[in-house]
Amino acid sequence: MNFLTVDAQTGREQYHAWDGPEQDFVATYNIITKDLHLALKLAEQADVELGLLKNASEYADAAKADPRVAERWKRIGDAWPKRMPGDGV
Image (cartoon, rainbow, N blue to C red; front, side, top):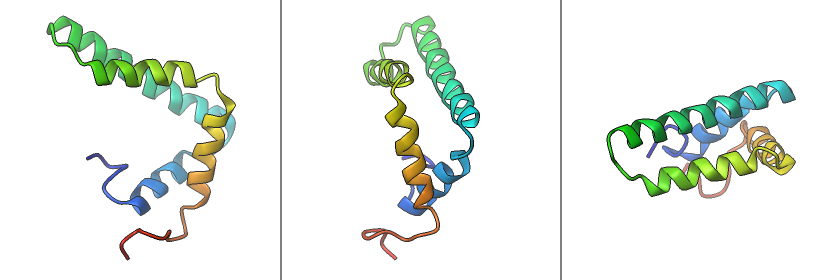
């Protein structure tokens, strides 16, 4: 579990914070892919195979060019002030 998955509302609040102008999305996405690449390099140096991390990194790299990714982030962020069914509140 991480800060995006602790509960749905917390996750939406974070996406909302990231949901700004296009250049903000691109900058955030670049940080995410950079961090994934760094984690893979560290795993390689430690001679540890992290298949799931590698798959996530490859997906992030491939999805970067997909305009639907930014649209999905925006939809999630736009839902921020609302409670959604199943939030447990």
